[in-house]
Image (cartoon, rainbow over all chains, first blue to last red; front, side):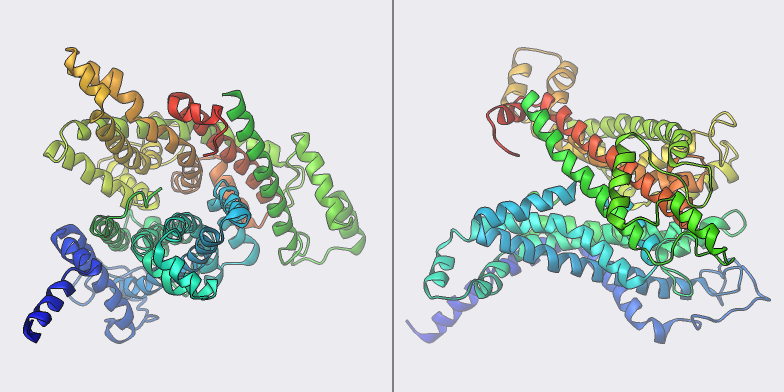
Length: 295
Length: 313
């Protein structure tokens, strides 16, 4: 067998990796691809906002007041003459940051909790998962409102509180994955090689459970963003001078009779983003062939 | 069934106790006492007030006393409005919120269930795509955006319906109920479609068709019972969501219900009011989760059997 053939075979085999398969399947799902594109667009805009925003964040023009969309202000201005597009761009930074950071918190807690419970098994597993069951029954929406009232409206606390709520499902998914994975031979091999459990979990088990983790993460982000917007709408989330999409919608709703654009554009931005994330999540679930990740 | 109910009730008690404990201590460690107002209070008055609200006692005996009050159905006084109690507030707000929630739930199950069943009868045709696309919009459109938009269109532009209030003008209950129910109609549509699709492919449905039953009887008599199971199981968690949604809807439409009182208490930092309502609402949510589990079990013989033989979920 000459070297060319071997290279051909190697190349042919490269093309069938799980991730490439998934990517091919995802690309066929037009809605999911659209979701991905819109999401990347939003992220790039959010990252570049300080340089590309049409106006300064705190620029006011009280003489101008609220004006409908025009050439100078594409999405109009609010009662203080602030450019709405600029507000939405800066608000998007906060809304997306809450979405991603709080989801990361949830990911970190949920994956480690579920991985440990599933790997160790036995009584530890029973106790850890019973705790998850109990926490599941708690009315967390009310608890977050309570936390924000008691400890003040603090962005960091908001990240932590939302993250602390959303980790439960992740822990359950992770534990299920661990239980089936730890029966497999490569884990047995790792154990007999004498690797410490932490290394086995980190190097062998978590990477093999990436599919469900990715899918569930994509579906957690929109629910987290919705939660942030909900709190900000009630006035219990992000506080001025900072802004977020939820806060903009709340202001827009107050003045919608005279200035409907102040409600419609922030609302549209939030809805489109949530749409994109949900479509992408659904598409990824089909592409990675993950079952029951929404329970 | 009795064994199942008992085990579920036993699980609910520690959860409710945990809620009470966590809420109590959270509220007590909150920075700033309830009487640290701008105006300096004479020390004697402050001491008298603190004695009245038992703040002069050690924290743990305050906690025990609070548990004792709760056991007698006393949710405590309000710090901000002397003379008003959490019980009065609940008495005034609960009927309103319950009515709003009931209408929303009716809208959600009727419209959502119907849409889901219709979609499931002809999968992957326009009859499936249109309701499911609408459901996706319903899921992505937050309550606090849908509410103002509905007010803008039907209240202000078209002037068809009143924009606020509850029971004052005919028709003023329509918009809030739709706003609160819409998202759940969307979820229920998706759940009932998936449930029906699974059930309609089962052997017993083929048997029903084979023995010549008309299609509507196959769907209604044999399909719905199994197909709507996921919806029944969803009603418990949906109740918690409806309560949280009522915070927003009651604020938007200025409805004097529990949700609006809760948000106002949160703004006023009325700690005892928050403590009392949190405990009350949490207990309600835990009980509803229990109820929906029991209902789902009574509809599903397999699940019932699992509990009778002592299996855990």
